[in-house]
Length: 264
Image 1 (cartoon, rainbow, N blue to C red):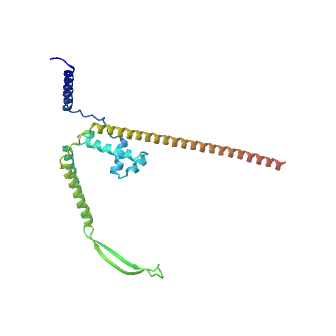
Image 2 (spheres, rainbow, N blue to C red):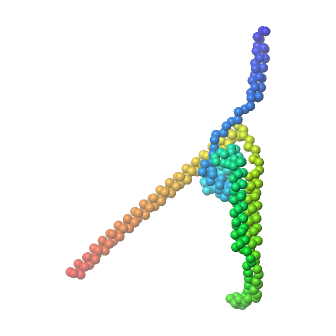
Image 3 (tube, rainbow, N blue to C red):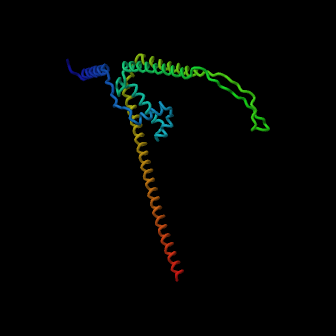
């Protein structure tokens, strides 16, 4: 076969097409994300927002960061929880959680039963209550005229029983949740999503470090200011003692001079 430029171009195109098909058939290796776990600051922010019910703006004001940074930390914390593996960081797997929840449910039921018996024993029977109706004349508000007194019997066991039934239902709901099938694992993030996550994480970490640095500077300035005020107070006290000593010396000198004049 004669090797002509057209033939070489045809072979090159076929080779490029074969390489492109091979690259398309080869699955792209997922990009691994740098390991991250929440530090004390992230745990505290998540606790304040999700557990204590504070707003993100309030937490941002307390931490001297922006609300977007607090929102970013919450999202990163929740994504870390969603992608965490079983038994990672001391977590319980499904079997361990089910066994622990069953034991905890049994113990709680025993406690509820004991509380029911104790409260029933303490609140058994009825209690007498009375209601007085008193009127005051407009001309003499200090004068009280009793119109009538109503007596009744109050049963207190119903209120406690309702709360105990509610606690028992909550406990049963917890056991039912523990027995449910484990949810499917979360999908892996794409390369673009990982890059965006890392960019946002870097910005959030920088702002947190800057806020921490500002707090340390403010604390150092406050300590320096307090020391300066203490030093000034010590100097004022020393000056007051010095003036008092001078005044006392002048008083003694004047007393001695008056005594000498009287003797003369």
